[in-house]
Amino acid sequence: MQYLFDSNASVHSLTITGESYKYLFKARRHKVGELIACRNLKDNFIYFYKVENISKKEAILTLKDKRELIVKPLKYLHIGWCIIDPKSIEKTLPMLNEIGVSKISFIYCHRSQKNFKINFKRLEKILIGSSQQCGRSEIMQLEEVKSLQNFFEIYPKSAIIDFGGKTLKNSLLPKSIVIGCEGGFSENERKLFVNRSIYRLDTPMILRSESVVASISAMVLL
Image (spheres, rainbow, N blue to C red):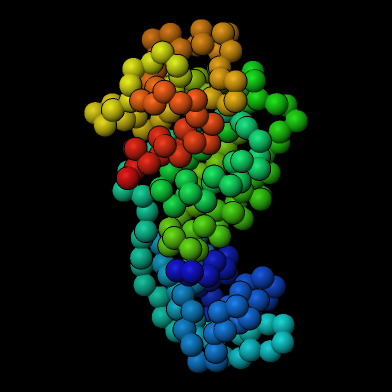
């Protein structure tokens, strides 16, 4: 863990309880007198707290130092991801956060199952856990868009990954790209692709949606 997230980090004293307490003092076995790095993910500072006291259910930390430390992606990538099973999204999200995806817009496409609902509080918790491990100093932006048409109205310059497009190469890497769900795009949705950049991955295999998202993210950002 690169730091501990605490929304109150920056104040003089922190009281650590719950999961954070169990992780720091049961799993990692920090002791009184040790320094713990903390972030609030609202500013660019990392705060160093000294462990003053450890009881059975909580620990008291006091602020000793702080310094600005920006750990952000070197490149920008915005993904328009047609909604798939939230369980698959949750498994893939930490990897995308570590690779450095800046923003994901979850889109309800024609072939997205309508019973799939995005739990943004759960995804934020996953992103915080991932950022604590990889050191990222900002949280990936997440949003929901009602349809592909709405998405293109908001982000008109976004490219698309679809069968029949040009092979995606390093010289063509986009900053905003739409990736479909299982079953791909409907014919009515493809009518929205007129005069837009359409790409495909150079593989004969049929990839799952989350595999495409991970592959594109690695190509653009790493």
